[in-house]
Image 1: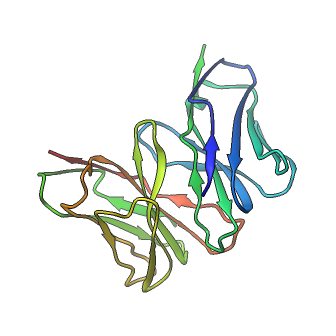
Image 2: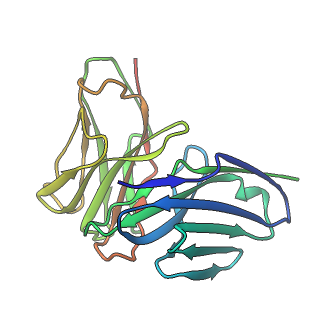
Length: 111
Length: 113
């Protein structure tokens, strides 16, 4: 099985930088995804990491360390619209494309 | 426009009734998934299908059933055997390439009283 941990809630100020951490334990790692979900809406894809290192995509970056079972999502120049839940999801090597999701981190951006 | 549709957005049922949630995609994806989301619980996998006419149980399949007769469609039936059916249900699809993300539908909020 898999175990994925994320902080439940975080707060930050508009214009700031925030880092959302995700730790995981899995018998066979095969990729990590980050999704953003606004309340009552569908999750939307943000990033994918399968090799160690940093993936940058505009204001969002995601980092992975497979040896430490650790990832983070970095959000820069925070905007009010970034207030949402951020979901970390891990794929294992079972041969299927299923994901196991963490419980999500609710980020509140204040003015 | 390609995407995933789920209908209806809100659904109300009486306890003891079966209810079927629809999910349709025109992304030409082979794989489809059903998740349930409860407050503070994250997404939990109910059923998934890698290919037409085949599907597998996820982590919380008890009280649910699915079919995959067409590539585009993956309906979920919530049966009266599901003890706590009130939840937000999300359908997703993806290609079977490992690096490809799952695309989600808008969700159906089911309330059973």
